[in-house]
Amino acid sequence: MDRSVMLAVTVSLLVAAAVTEVSCKRVTNAKVLGFDWKNCGGPDVPAVLKTLTVSPDPISIPGDLTASASGSTSVELTAPLAVNVTLEKEVAGFWVRVPCVEELGSCHYEDACDILTQLIPPGQDCPEPLHTYGLPCRCPFKAGSYSLPQSQFYLPYMDLPYWLTNGNYRVQGVLGSQGKELGCLKLALSLHSN
Image (cartoon, rainbow, N blue to C red; front, side):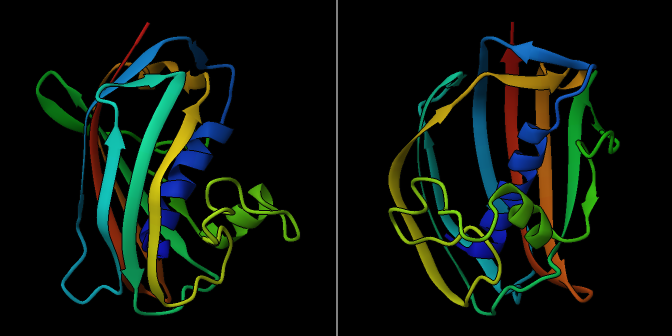
């Protein structure tokens, strides 16, 4: 999978999973429906996600997820790699930008490489299935093509802010370095929880 696009998505998900505050709600049973994605960068961005499939539909949290992906980057991705995340929620038929609250929402992250190093310290193996397929989980990410074959993941219980537990969402992640856009990915999904 394209490392920069995967990095943007991974960092967004890891940051979201790492944030647990008093205003969070334990999600004991949630469904993700209508998951969709597309590249949103210009024709010359070096990082492109080529394929991404996830199943089942709906995705249960907690539960098992099957995913595969492929992508490429034509440049080496080194620190600092900035990530701009824009999160929108549909409210009464309008899309409303969710502000950055406690590093969750529409946030700017100065260096995704630093975040990855904190989550997966040097010397520690990359998590599965990345380790099995020789896919990196820290910077630098070399130029090239990447592929994650169909793999199984377990999605655990999550703590989510109360305002992020039900609704339709759009997420855009833009990866950049030194003022240049390196990749862009848009996700759309519906989240329904008990």
